[in-house]
Length: 129
Image (cartoon, rainbow, N blue to C red; front, side, top):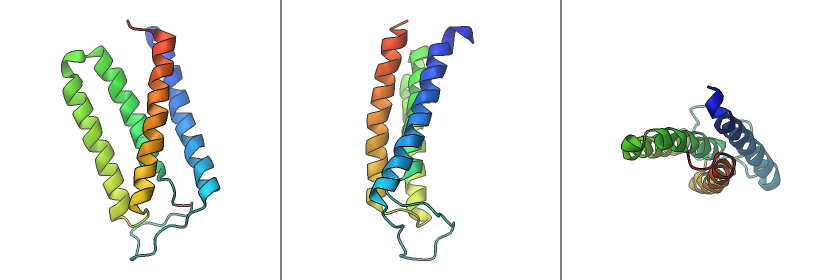
């Protein structure tokens, strides 16, 4: 475990940063949630961007990157599984009626940018092992 402290630190910072980004953007845009049909769950925060989309791409994207970098033979399977899981999370938010499609797309976009910045920070800290 001691060999992966930098990875753990960057992982924690990436997840915390995603939470702060999501909360801040919701407070800036203050977009109400859709009222198209009866929602299956109750959400009280603003709609834009989707925190689940943003968080899932950061969490599962970085996790997939870390695991794939240690097991390169399985990289294609790992990334495929991560992409499917992230897509299902976004679709579920639409199904539940708590987001507009633009909320999901924005969450994915911001999350992807934060993920790339986090991976870059990780590479600068750890380098290629």
